[in-house]
Length: 477
Image (cartoon, one colour):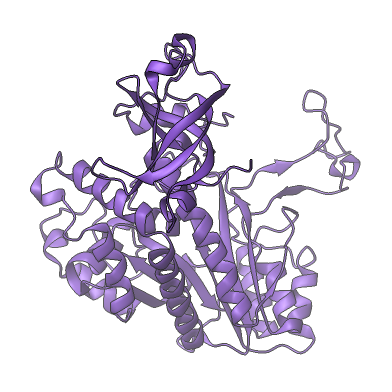
C-alpha cells in the first residue's frame, strides 16, 4: 500500500478509509498517541495506538526521532487541535532512535545548539518551516522571471574576474600548497596551475550576465556565490545564493521598478503558499520578543511586516537627501549611532539604513545616486562627475536587501574608471567587448537570497536560513 503524505491526510475530505503514513515520531504520549510528521507540513497527524494489543518491545521503540510506518483508518479526531487522526491497525518501526543520544528531543533548544546540529535541526518545527519557505521562495524566483520572459543563465562558479573589485575572494588551485612552483620573479607560477592562470570562486555572476543580456535582452542568474570576507556577523555568510537579473535598454528607473515588482511578487507568493509555516514562525517570533525590552521589540508582527511591504510603495530617496536626513537625526546629534554621519560621502551602515526605513520614512526605501568612490567600477557615472546611477533597497529589520545600478555603457568612461582603480584592462577585455560592439543602456541588480529568506521568515541570524552555513572558522557537515 502506497503511503500518503501527512499534508494530504490532513486536507482529506473523506474519512473511514484505510491509509498508510510514514514519517518520524515527534512525541509519543501515554503509550498511545504518536505525533507523526513527514516534513510535508508543519502539522503532525495523531496516530492512536491500541497499546493493549501492541507488544511492549514495539511500544518501547516508539521514541522521538524514530521512523515508523502506520496503517489504519483515517477518522475524525475526538481531541482538540486536529481535524483527523489515524486509528492504527498495524505499526512498523522502520528506524530506531535512541532517546539517550538523539539531540532533537521535544524541548526548547537554543539556536546556537541547533547550528551545531545543522544536519538534524531541520527535524524541528522552526527549521522545517524555514526550509519549506526557502524552497517555495526559490520556486517563486524562477516563476517570476520565467513569466516575464527572462532567460535563465548559469554563470561560472570558477572565474578569473573580481566583479566587485574588493579582492575578498576564495582562491581555486590544484597546485601543491606545501611546494608552490615559482616563476623567475619569485612569484607563484599560475601558468602551471590547472587553469593556467589565477582563479577564484565567484563573488557575482553579473559581469558574465551582462554579456548575455546584450544578446538575449533580459536574463537572470540564480546560483551560489562566495565572499572571503572575515565578517563574523548575523548578516554575513561566506557561501550564499544570489539572484541577479540584467536587462538591456533598462535605465535606473526601470531597474528600480523591476526590483520592487519582483520583491513584492515573491513575498506574496510565500504568503499565498506558506500560510501554516508563516503563522508558526510569527508565533515563535512573538514568544522570542517577550524576553526583549519593550524598546527593542518589533512594532509589527511577521505577517504585518510582510503585508507592509506589499501594501506600501517603496520610497525613492537620493543618497544626498538621505545624508541630510541622517545628519540632522536625533540619534546622530546625540551620538547614538555607532558611526556618526559627519559629511557627504560616508558609506552608510546598517544602523543608518534601518533608521531611514523604520523611524523616518516607515516604509521600504530605495536609495539612489551614490558617491562614485564608494561604489563599483561598472556603475554609470552621472553628469555631476561625482555620483553614479546606483541603487540600494532597504528593508525593516534587515537594512540593505538589494544592490543594483545602471551600468556604464560608454567604453571610454568605463576604461578610464578601470585605470583609476588599477583594474587590468586585458583581464576584462571580454567584458569591454560589450561596450565595443553594440553598446546600449542596461541595468541590473543583485539580491542575496538568504537576506530575502531572513526577512520572510522573521529570523534574526542569516545562519539559520541556509541548510549548512559557511562562516569564518566553520565548514562543518
